[in-house]
Image (tube, rainbow, N blue to C red; front, top):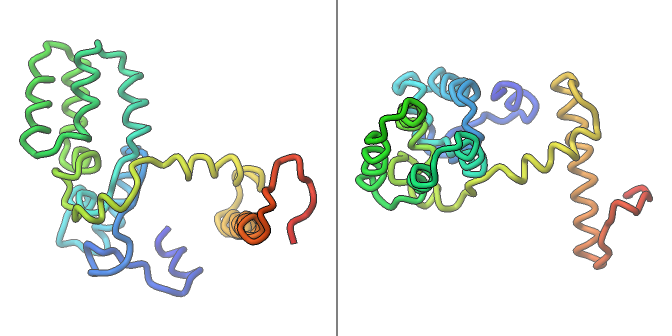
Amino acid sequence: LFEVIENLSEKPVKFYHIDGTGWKCILGDLDPGQAKGLGLALEKRDPSRNWEEHLTYIFKSCLVHFNRNLIAKKFDNEVHLLAKSIPTRSSVEEVHECFKKLELYDNKRIIDWVQYYRQPYVLASLNKYISNMENEIWDRHGNNTNIAEAAHAQANREGKQLKLLTAIMRGRRLDERLFKIAEINDKFGVPYTRRNKSEIK
């Protein structure tokens, strides 16, 4: 993907934790395959760190997805609240104390959950005190992918299962249209509604 972006933009993609400039944070839903794919792409660019370590410098997990996955586990209330508190714990020690308490439960489902979320790159994506990302960068970026998720419905109107370049070009056309709507709203105070079927020019 990064090579495609570089070819289309004719600019190199740079990463702050590797190059000292460029992308500082990538927010995602913690899909294991996607996270590993990102890590391996970063490792290819900078083999001095393994893929998991790279993620601890740049990847941040969506807390909406984290909480949704936690609810789906149907843990009892005490376990649920303890696990849910991990992203908001304010020190490395507090985070590890949560895991110690969770491990006291003699329950395979809880132990499996702990083993997955205790992986360094996973845990670093959830709590800024575990992450190698600078605190200022962590705080500046959001903690959910809701905007991107909401954009899927809009983008899908342009077509599904398209070739990558076609999808990018149609996405660009949609972005231009949405920016024009925002500009008209800002300039003239005219809100755009779904009932308005006129063409944006």
